[in-house]
Picture 1 (cartoon, rainbow, N blue to C red):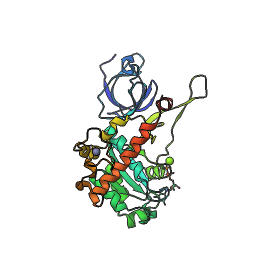
Picture 2 (cartoon, rainbow, N blue to C red):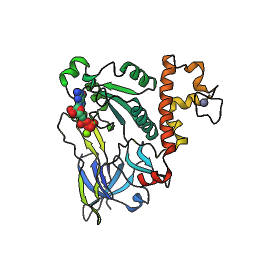
Picture 3 (tube, protein in one colour):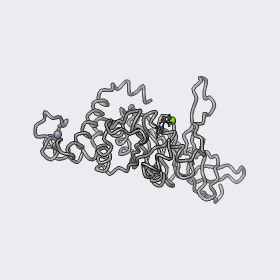
Picture 4 (cartoon, rainbow, N blue to C red):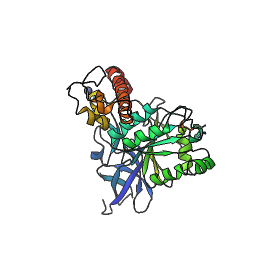
Length: 328
Ligand SMILES: Nc1nc2c(ncn2[C@@H]2O[C@H](COP(=O)(O)OP(=O)(O)O)[C@@H](O)[C@H]2O)c(=O)[nH]1
Ligand SMILES: [Mg+2]
Ligand SMILES: [Zn+2]
């Protein structure tokens, strides 16, 4: 091995093959990893910052060492309780929602906020399709206040109509673009909310996003897919199969409350040790005067509690065998 060690970032991974972007030269090279970096259950993922070495005789690149991660995008494997990591070092989880068709759903935002807290990735909520916003459908002022209370950044945009965007939204899209500058982001949200449209608007249509299909593996017709980080000019997009799943049922119900840090804080003051924070528990911290649902603050707390309880009952009722099947 030579002394020529290069700093790089993994931008595409498929099993043991990696494409690495060299920091200094911005050149993309193929690399393999030293065996000890791919121990059982552990691997290198897109977003990992690594050190590359070259084999003098062949000019091949070898990943010699991986740097510590700032955060990880992962699911928990139910059988082993270990993390299955799909990406690392993500700056933002962009939670895209639609102001109209599909109808705005607060519960989906709370669901992805759980993931953002679990992964240690800063969430951003984006209200798209503001050109079709109807105040009779939902109250965006209230939703925005609720996000502010949680310390979550938000933007109101229209990804379809530039004129509307600049005339009526006073440039929500350009503010959003500014926030993303130089960052690596993962976009999530229901189908139809405008993820593709927003991404293409942000990248000014320069890049066509396609998940690359990499031949067939093994005997069956099972097709494998790359995970990758796509350079969209102003920012980087993480793209990986299955990464946008809504399901939270890999999370242990006992760990859910800590993923609602705002509620955990209140629950700490609950006098009951095993409280499910239901209204019939007279004296429960959530039903004190302080969080009276007649007040704005109380209403927000209770809407968060409602999301918590919904998710809690959902992940408590998924039978173990079903989880195993889904997340093997
Ligand atoms: N009126 C309106 N329609 C939009 C907007 N953004 C996206 N759409 C439309 O919504 C539909 C779904 O968008 P798409 O980007 O495919 O959603 P995805 O499933 O989240 O990727 C398409 O017909 C888009 O043209 C918007 O800001 N306003
Ligand atoms: Mg799409
Ligand atoms: Zn309680």
